[in-house]
Length: 228
Image (cartoon, rainbow, N blue to C red):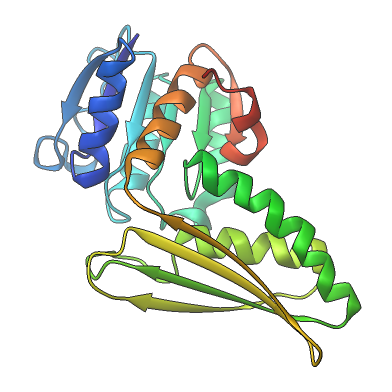
């Protein structure tokens, strides 16, 4: 299928590479070509199976609104827009398009979410939760979207929101640790990314999944359905 990729940074470049390896046609639209989403017209997106966004928190909302207006399905890996979640869901439902988002498209991270949800039951027994995320110094948002999603998962299961600590150092791809601490012991769960390829592979598989679908989806809901 044809994929339009927004953002050709470190992760976006890998998305393009993986998509082509999986037999897809990829068109990359750079940030400077697309001020306020103006390049994302119905004409330009005709025949496109999905738009994939790995841009910046400053530009993602314009891209989302323009893509939905054009009637094209979308995969969003950019964070920093979650305060507009209800607004975006309404736009998708009114336009009857398909929209799939994630704070992290790594298959390993999404398996990690399931493990953390099980561990979060410790809060029911008096444990305290704590989330630590470490990323490279170039990362624009803090805490990371993945850390926020982990904290949400812990709160949903355990009934109490854990504190989040953000660390920025070197070129760390991404490490997320969730701790459950009591006076007697500590449970530590960690996911460490070695490269961005896991994010890219998940995003491309997400685009394959959302093609032709209608509705608003989070990756955690559907990743078990993805093709190998």
